[in-house]
Image (cartoon, rainbow, N blue to C red):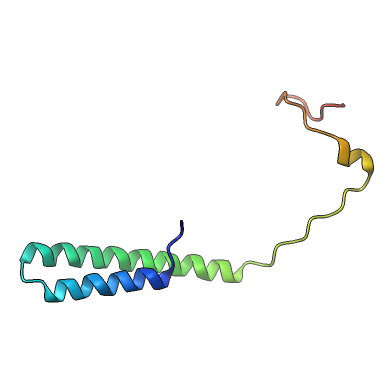
Length: 85
């Protein structure tokens, strides 16, 4: 499952607020580290989303050139090409 950048930023803000309002130092320390980790994950998610938006649209599958190509099956033996060859 890929995390969205929006969800990661929300988690980052949640942990940052938790760190700000924490009374105990160890809770504050863990929340700061969690906030930084969610920030890093948000950056990675933003890069993925940008890459996905730049990708060209998928190409429609091409029709087989002949009926013979449609019927051919690969051999179960990985050293061979087609079963009927």
